[in-house]
Image (cartoon, rainbow over all chains, first blue to last red; front, side, top):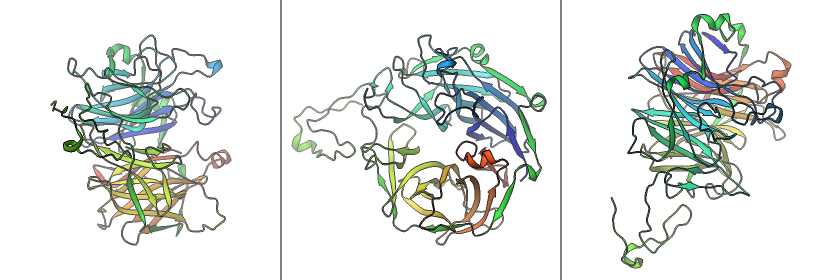
Length: 306
Length: 183
């Protein structure tokens, strides 16, 4: 063991990202201030987000805590502030990091929002200053947007974030959950800043940097140790491990395999702006493996729209 | 993207099935699978990470209540390998509880000996295990470390305080691996 870092304000690490052109390691996750008395499965626990920049020698350069106020805050009745960090990326070209926040912060959301999670994407520079923030919601649908752990990737200027929700609502389409037996659908969305006028699919609102910045509390390298935010040790005795010999038996499984999922994507896709039934025959869809013989069975109503 | 589903129109039944799907950057469906080992479903996919050479994706999950490590082709989701891990002293009456998260890393060419190794970490009952396994037709465990609890409370509270969330290598130092999570 070279070093061991312990974060007092980070109960769980949800994501990491590494810089390839320097020695930085970025972490993000969440902090449960009352974890010892919270009840499993911690759905109503108080959460604060946490973002860390550290070096590969264990030095913690800064620690940022993100939180806001639940618009329906009522601690006595189990409605707490809940803000979590679920994804992080570092872009070596721009030297910026981006975080995926699962938040109920009223300071970032529309005034009519309730006690459910929305998604925020925040871009910061290496010193922790906010560069851009956008909040993505499902408008009037009061479904939690649960982000996935390690749920953010960046390709060039495009961000892809993943999660699950009871349904979705975009400017073009909507999927409502059953009121009696709701179930989650997983989702993957693509987002790119500065595409107004072209990309009006997601319900989004860009937040002023100063407003977003006020939700962040930063500890610098010098104050982290002094204020007990985190500690780093190189003592092997701080992490007690024993080596076990012949403890696990691995074996290959010859009769294993993957099988195609049945129904797959919901059609139309959330950002499809137009759809049309091209034949009188029902579409092939997942397990509904139907004939699609366009020459024999259509009635001359098909045409292309590209 | 991976996880677990209880939808019978996604996987074959309402019982828990691990799933994994791949999209292209425009959101088009590439492939999506659920998994079986003989008659046992892989009940959960908890982590995935590209192998060190970027040619395959390494996946960690649970099958028949045991950790399974899978290597898949990224183009079509087919298996390159499927390896189960079993505790050496397992008996028919054993009730060992495993929990996996995202701690899997496949170093295809080791810095020292050019061997293909898996690194993984998971929870077995109340303990965090970290191991290295030589990958191949006959996989072998190279070493295993077991993390010892500091307090009795930690020992009995198995799912709250230990999360081997990720294992990743240092892109600038091939001799270093990070184990990230909660302990």
